[in-house]
Length: 499
Image 1: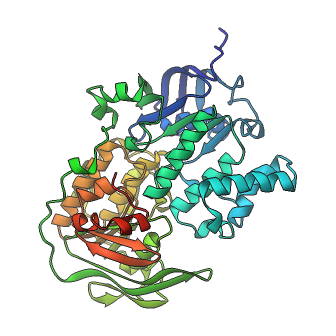
Image 2: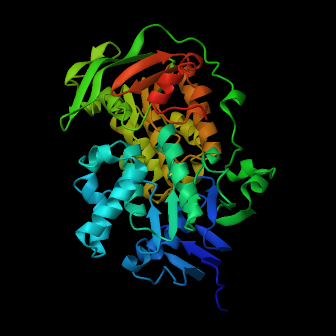
C-alpha cells in the first residue's frame, strides 16, 4: 500500500528497544500535514521521546531495536535515510540539551552544523546572527557551553537546531528548564515559526505553556495513541488523569501550603557565599538557610546562580568566600562522601547520577555504601514514587521523568537530613508531580529540610513555606510566597511571572 501525501505518516508502527521486552510503541497510526502545530502529550514513559527519535532517524539508526510498520517524513523513510540528509529537513531538540552543545564556545557551537554543510563564512555568520538576535543570547556567545545553566544550554541547543532552518521542528520538553521570560520568548518564536509554515511537534507535560497555540494534540499512553484532536476537545475528556495529564490551572485556583511551622534552628546554611567561574561572579555574597521540616523554593532566572548555590550545599563546589554549614558544622574540610550522610543532592541532569544495572540496585547502592540500608524504608520509597514496575529495568532505558523519580528516591534512601533538588518536576507528568509533592511533604513531616530550585511556580506555591528569589547571584527576597508575589518589579527582574 502506498503511503499518503501527508508530510508525516505513521502506519501500524511497533517498536521495541533492544534491552527491553515490552513494546515502546504499539500499533501507532497517524498522519500530520505540513504546517501543523502538534502538542505531543502523555505520562512519563508513554513513548513520546521514542516517537520523536523515530521521526528523525535516531531510532533505529542509533538506538537499534525491532521496528515494523510504514513510516514517511517529507517523502523519506528516516529509518533508512542518512543522518546528514535528515538533518536538512528535521530539527530535533533533545530532553538533555547539553548533549547537543559540542563547541568550545556558544558561537562555535551555533556555527558547527552550518560549517558541516559546507556553507561559506559569510552565510554562516548571517544565519547565526539571526538566531542569536531571535533568542536574545548575545551575552552567551563567548561562554563555554558547559559553564551555562540548564536553561541557557536549552536556548543554545535550540539555536543550533533553528540555524539549520528545518521544515520539521521536533522539540522534546523545550520549556523544562526555562524561566518565565524565556518561556514566553520561546512560545512567541514557535508561534512565528508556525505562521511561516514550519511543522512543529512539541512534547510537554505542563500544558499551559503551549496548549493555546497548538492546532492539534496527540496523546500517548503505554505506547498507544489514545487521543487525537484539537487541544480543547482532548482536554475535555474525562479520563485525562489516567493518561498522566492535568488541565491547566491559574495560580489563584491553587491553595497555598498548609505545612506546620518549622523549627527555628537552621539545618542548612549558606553564609555570604561567593563563587567565580571563568572570571564571572556567579554567586555574590549569597545567604540562605533552612530548618528541619521546612520546604524552601529557590527561584530565579536562568543563570541566576541557583544550581551553583545548591552544589555548594553538599560540597561538590567549595566556597571561595563565605561559609556553608550543615547542622552547625562548616562543610569546607569535610569529604563529599561523608557529607552524603547528611545532605542529598539531585542535580538537573539526573541521568548522570544513575550507574547501577537496575533500578532496584540503584535504590540500595547509596544506603549500603553508607551502611544505613533499611529494606522497609526502600520499599516505602518504591511505593511512594511508583517504581515497582521499573525495578528490573536499567535506569539508562527509562524516560527522563522516570530517571528523575529514581534519582530522588535513591537519595532519600540514605535518609539525609537535608534534601537539595534541582528542577525536580522537569519531565514529570501530572501524576508524578503530585506524587513528588506528597513525598516531599511527608519528608518534611519526618524532619528533613528541603530546598528546591524550580521554575514551576504553581507546584512550588502549594508546597513551599518560603520562596527565596535569586537575582545576579544574590538572594533578593526570602519570604512567604504571597509576600513575594506582591513584588511585581522584582518578579519581572528575576525572570518570574505568575502562571
